[in-house]
Image (tube, rainbow over all chains, first blue to last red; front, side, top):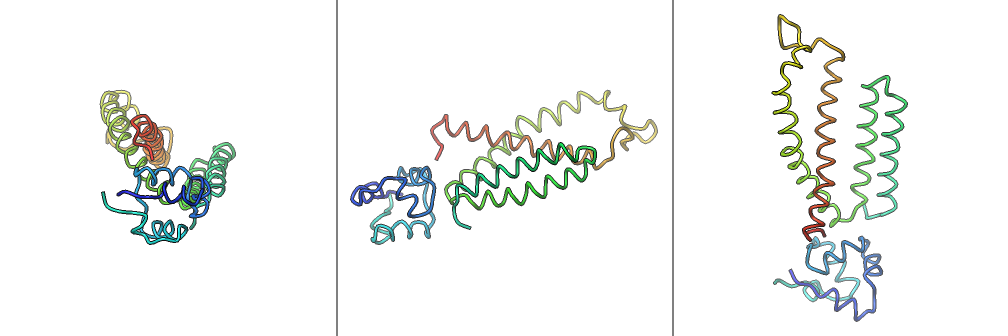
Length: 63
Length: 142
């Protein structure tokens, strides 16, 4: 699964640590999601979309 | 339960400290010691596990699963099956001559049961650290 977290994070000028704190996960976990090494659950995916104020499909898409 | 790094380290540290303290204080009473360590270790272990976020939980589950496989492959198989087979003569001293099957020496059956369970869990715990190391070296760590 591809994601645009890095781009969206850059637009908001947030560090990985800052975003991780906002969605209440470890920075290493966010790094794994951002690099496509791990897929988040639907609730976490929705939480990520919510902090960016976009739809889930604007953050995640199929390969 | 939500992710909390502080709660995770608190639970893990307290579990290890409690296990160590119980081993030192209760060692004359192995059954009480075993039950205490398992109860406190279990409760605090669950607390630690549920203090992780979902990706960390997935990682831990993966590492414990592969650690269990490593323990069976490199721990259980050679040490329990092959070594016990090779040591049949030495183990014969633990059995009464006539029946040949009932342990008659040193400790109660509960002690040996606890030892067996402890060795298996210990092997899996070591295997889980090895699995983490393998994931890291192979670039599959998350």
